[in-house]
Length: 559
Image (cartoon, rainbow, N blue to C red):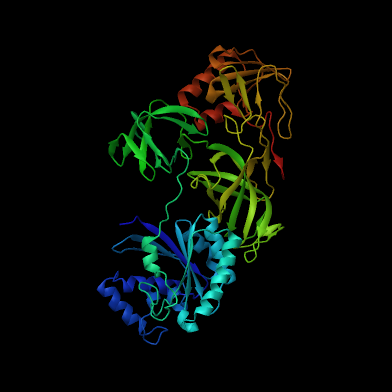
């Protein structure tokens, strides 16, 4: 028996998507007797003059039945002798394109219906583009309602040529074109004696046999969904393995911090295991304390990195227009972080594929944009690591999903320390973003760090003590608490980089790794500052008590 197939049905309004799936379920005897009886009774008052209306099996919402169209995404689970299936029947109307995109995000194959009397329409092209955007690689173009055109081969061949043109424009692969009639059952579950000119498989037989195996992604990675601490003796990191396998004893790298630790134990469910593989939800414990939280990624044997700036192909789903400068929450993997749409590079004409200049994007539009996140985030191109290459934009006020998209290009790859300005001397390395610029939007009043600094400074280097939103003394000390390192700046030059235990407070101004003033004025208060950090592990109360933002920093409006 072949593995589970997750597929989506889509197309224009009234192309017969729900009828098609309903007919598969009915013909293959995959519904209960009471469902069959209810279907027959409901059909008597339907739109087919008493004949069975197979779409009623899927169109469950009252509003959908009244209109005779699908509004929400209807999921159905069924199994034949050859395979198990999950199908998402999605809306065809342009108004509900966002619903269709939700269905496409889970699918491995798309069945796109085309009305034989109308051919390839704009909405057909839109759905094909969205399916490709969401990573679907296998397509079935079901030329439906062949009964309305007299089952004529000439009409099918005309539409087949339109599909080939669409395939070329969208660079689609693995396509199958099948003529059928969802209402009459021709080529749905069994072959049709009315289209003897078609020698291929009926739709269900094709779906039972198609191989949709995906390419293996590089290495092992697991986005952390949750940190599990049932008691003080156990700390585990929970998530689903997205690629590769992991075993007890493997050395893992934690992104974005790049700390390393070995796997101490693996739980699959509540059972101990020596190994786990792609697709399994697991709890991993490590042999030492490292900085891991929700949104971190455990990796091994992969070149995944962190970025703040990316070019994204997206589908705009909100009623309000998208404009450059819009601020949203970016959800990528298990991480949710503020970000800004810095630029709309171009929008894509859904019919021709032409790239058009645009200052804004309306609902259901496709565009390529540049997004900058408030902090570096673990990501990759969608084609290389799917889970870390797809994202959604969330409205910061309503919490509604505004857009979905995939990462196409990454910019300014960070070094070892996540695109933050860092200090290095020998084996000593300290993260710091004291040179980041802070900007506040005058429209949303949201604050973002917008300037990326990737240089590493060492002893003898001159640092920029003045920027647009910061102004440090010519001589001061930087205490990078998370790395336990002190950096001494004298006359704008890095004079020393040393472990924190070797640092001696001399009365110079002190800032933390983010450029906030540390409220210390003596060796005693400095010792208290460090002791309290060690005991609280940097609690919000600690930062509230010991750090001040406005001494050396300010926020620029309107950037």
